[in-house]
Amino acid sequence: MAESSAWTQLRELRNLIIGHPIETGAGESSKRAFVTRDRLESESFDYQVWQPGVEKTFFKHAEHSALYKDYKLEAASHLSEIVSILSRLPDDIRC
Image (cartoon, rainbow, N blue to C red; front, side, top):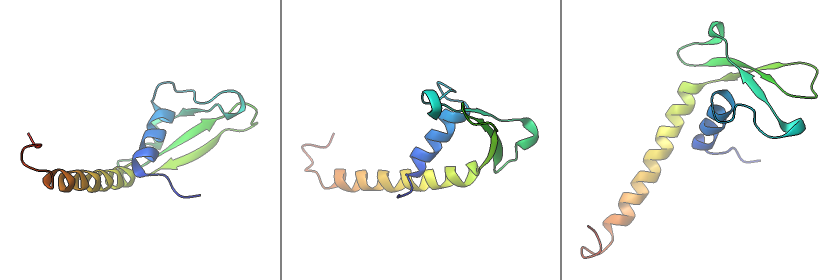
């Protein structure tokens, strides 16, 4: 399976950790995540995931600084494409 875009990964992490709603999915696919201060670092953090029907919680690691860097590169690439397309439009269409 191909890895999703950095934008999608960042959004999914945000929605799981602090998004609306914190509880995602329904039934067995539902998850809740908890971040504690002792797991926070400037470049990354660990978070605990709880899922109904699973006997144990588990920890995951998020490299948010690297993910944000990838997101910015991805966004810059998309914006560059847009500028390139817009620059080829006739002057009377551009405003």
